[in-house]
Amino acid sequence: MKIEFLLEDLESADAARVEAAAARLAEQADTVVPTLLRGLAGVQRTTELEPVMRVLRHMGPPAFDALLAAWRRKEVTDWQAGRLLGVFDERSADQYAALAADPDYGKSGNGFQGLLRLRTDSEAGLRALVDSHARGRLVPYKASDYARLTHDTFRSRLRSMRRDPATPARTRRGAMAALVAGGGADALDERDRAAIERLIRVKIPHETPRLPSSTLSGWWLAVPGASYEGVFEALDLHGRQPVTVAAGIHAAESREIRVPGEGGAGRAVGRAFVTPELDGWRLVFGPFDLLVGEPWDDMVETVERVSVHCGQAQLFFLDDAGGSDVWMVAENGRVIRQYAAEGDPEWEGDPLPWETLAVDDPDFDPEYDEAPPNAGTTGARSACRHLSVDPGEVGPDTEIRGHGWLALTAPGVGHGAFPGPLPI
Image (cartoon, rainbow, N blue to C red):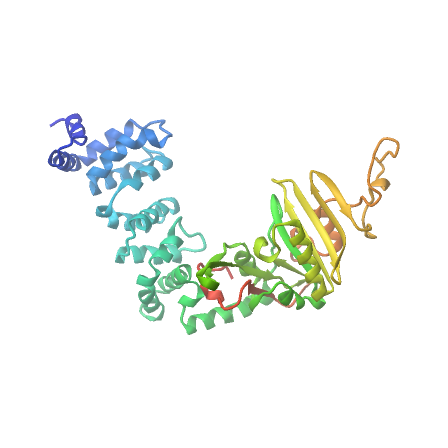
């Protein structure tokens, strides 16, 4: 029977005819699938792929193999392959697991996406998960989501891998990373947690700090190194523990989690990172909404509160895309100087000794130019260099004292509640 007639039967209202046509097409998958895919040259919209997607879905596993072979031969684009691989059902679960184990990062991600969609927790899926986390820091797309989905099922097996001396070292590392990806540090046993703590203590003295770039968007607080302890009470931070800068920055930039709150309502919890002392200053990074607050009054209240506990506090906020540029300095509970630009720049308070006043600029012409009498230095990137520390210039030449701290924005949660590994 010709392929065209079989394709027509797939559209039949007769279930028996559809099943028979799908079976016949599956027998000819090596011919049918390449023929269908050749017609997709230049196609860039999902709607144009839908007829082929319906055929592949009916054909099942043989079509999966034929599609994958065509993808490896580059007869379809990565985008097309990704869309088409999303149509297969539970009959192809083992094929998704095999694809998840592929050493090619992109192809592996498509495999995990399929396993996640089908909610498959097979032995093959476990092996793929461990292998992908054993490769290094670059984890395939959706692998971490799959680790969280299957954590309850896989946890005991992964722990057994960690303790089995016959298991290769690479596999044991992958099992540990998969445990943390699925259930956070709480998923590890006491032996592994103690090993991580020892490793952190070893790494801290030899680390060269690298802080996040403020390009496009960023914020941070700065407090004097001599009085930084007050920041934990001022920001209501809990459960602090020593951490490397690499781990602290990664944690502070990670997403918040939701935990049960009073009356059954959920509450958001995040992680804050307090850096080691850098040229005499400690910087604070973390979720802006939980540590500072969005309205302007909240920002002012936060920096003043921190200054009560630390003597002085500085807040810097940048959003190049939104046009915001803010810096402020508070001492002993009162903002003494602030700059804010969201369009026209505004200053409050007396200029600080290091500021360049607008009226002193060589290009300022008092006959034609206007400037408030307190108009001075503009921009957080410039101000932070004079006030404390420019995060972008922290590096090998920075004088470092002590170590960083990772803390939580709410009590009674624990660091282990946050899924995903941290680079040490």
